[in-house]
Image (tube, rainbow, N blue to C red; front, side, top):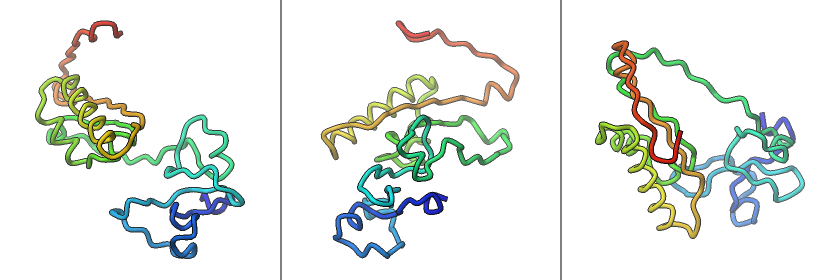
Length: 156
């Protein structure tokens, strides 16, 4: 889809001439993911194909329409996590699930995941990306129980 809109899909090393620009095989552990680049320039160089309100990236095929997968909730599903890419830059999905399982209160799990993500970002970079986490415990929802917890001080 992005190529049909005129984008180039290449890693940073390919754009900089370090690697063959015609190669399309990327390994997940190489640390240089494929990015969407404008046809005749170095910008935008995004590692995503979905974004909200990104007019520049829209011109090379980045869209706001999400990929959706429907999953039937069963008693085995205890919670779900929605998080920004800044969380998953250095944490695997399984590591996040394991951290959620360690905490009864989803707010505590969010705080632990955010703290770990922040720490890992600063170990690898001199900045952090957006770190946003939403955790929904569905165990109580399946039982028809509505459980309200007070908002953290200063939040609504």
